[in-house]
Image 1 (cartoon, helix red, strand yellow):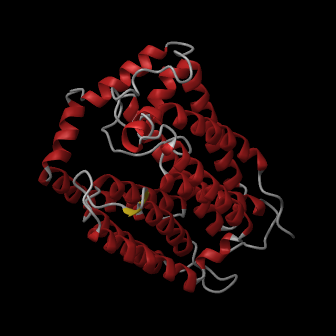
Image 2 (tube, one colour):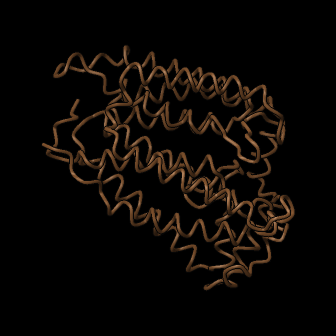
Length: 367
């Protein structure tokens, strides 16, 4: 059976979010852009370029059969490239106390974003690994060793930057994928218990991590969170009007990136914020339904892993804005300014659209 057309229903909320994101980046970044680059359109222009490149990548990836990524030569090459990038980033300039970015002129690239996608593909490929075309699955012990091994390598290199939050997200996503892949919950629970002392140790030994968690648990509001709440409160039901927000005028730091949801709440009000949440709900619910209709174990796990990645980032970002989660510094998928984030998110969507072509009844890519 030939592949179907991509699930275009999935594209509707995606287009809505991308369009709103572009509008809000222009609205939220003008003042900051003028201060940094002497051009009110500089950040918007970079976002537009990233969007064009990202959409091109989406269209290409939507055409490439996703089975291609689990070919050993392709998969191991991608792993080697990511490891090289994660090591090389330690030779880049320090920014905000960490070395997480490569810079080419005014454009930045964060290799840990690419590491998330490669690890998801790797986990899906090995979780669904079978003995021969129609054979039984390899024992979990044989499938877990390479997955845990790569997770450990990526985690160590990302902690070296340092980036504790991304490491926790990687572990969480792999855990969810292993559970969806059929790994008994008792093994996941045991793994979580073994990791707990290590996580606590990493938090306690770094003062800023401990302070961030204690401040959140004690509900001590930082300046950024306070300004975020002011922005959301000022918006009311319908907002102060597009482009009329005041918090972006150097009151709310990162108003066009990490806290763009607060800017949306201020300028478009509760109605605008609700629209964003509705579009995310539509996108993720449709995505999970489509992935559940795919017969291939590898395809299902790959799609679910990418959706969990995007969903996790969206939930954490919005929760931070609402003071429901400690500040992590994650962008809001499809909405925040940030070329690397936008292009990686669109690449994920390209793969998801390709997977959607192999829904129930198409055995061409069954494991």
